Length: 451
Image 1 (cartoon, rainbow, N blue to C red):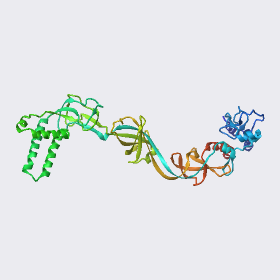
Image 2 (image 1 turned 90 degrees about the vertical axis):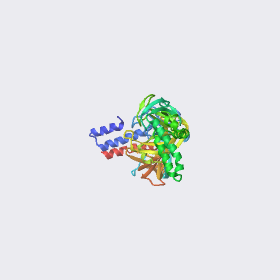
Image 3 (image 1 turned 30 degrees about the horizontal axis):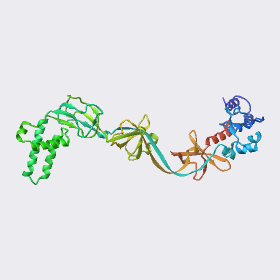
Image 4 (image 1 turned 135 degrees about the vertical axis):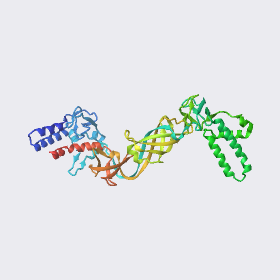
């Protein structure tokens, strides 16, 4: 229990007059605060010993304790002027501690302000810039996923080339060879229709628009077998080279065909094995296009109102430090996650070299201008529970503790909504030391207010 707590307990349970007790405590405290050992000490460069929490306590005893809180005292080294003048202990003790005036101002000796390293700054308007930062992760571009199936009918997988998940694929390479019911009849019908279309200009030379529509209709019917444009073009070329006799016997036609990859990428999901039977429209493979990737990031709830669609962001990768890219926010989740209290956003990045592998970590950062605000340095603001204080400099060591209302915080500065005027000078450093010195001087007055 500290000395102050003991005094409060004593005055509460004792019948002694409170005014007499308070007077006695004041004499005891002031005498302890200015107590200096009379015996001279060797010249070690130490001017005196003081308490870090109560800097007005001064002593020549290196093993002394603070009479207020009981903490061990720490040395204060002599300055050049102190060494030259060689002051007596009484002169050292004469340096005045913080004094709280009736108007609430704190007065400290100029040498004390210099000793604790007080600096000042002027309250002024600045353009605040809010830094935005969130961890992210590279994921698959879901818009580039492609499901491979045969829509026209059921069949069997004769040969599976893309036989495992993660297998690299190239555009135009075969994924599998399938045997599908009705495929032979579909080829014959298409060849006959195509040959008839080629003869149509001789019969209807002035109706090119209708002929073009007829060709697209024929291609749409054969395209349900998931053929590529090159495969359809090859079938059209065969239609012009074959004759009616071969067409009747099916000579040159195959009962199976290959399903080709529509782009460069990887096998994302494999749902089929070689020899398996499938139904019309059944998903066989899911392909992943690697040309683009997503970067999904989670911004803190406090920054949610600063996030907008199309906002430019910088994306870096801890595993690839040399790679720094820029992109715009493509999607914002309308809901904040209830567990993490974060807002989920998404960016799209090009990946032509395929070096951005889904799963690697990323760092998403950006900034947004908050406009011109009346600002003060964050170091100048002293939080005291639900309030914020600053010390306004009135010159001559007079500092006024003043409550302020704080708004936006950005890059070492805080917006002042009320409590300060532009041009006022405030303490920008050592605020906590000043606050500690002023609080102990006001403790007796605080006790008197609560009696």
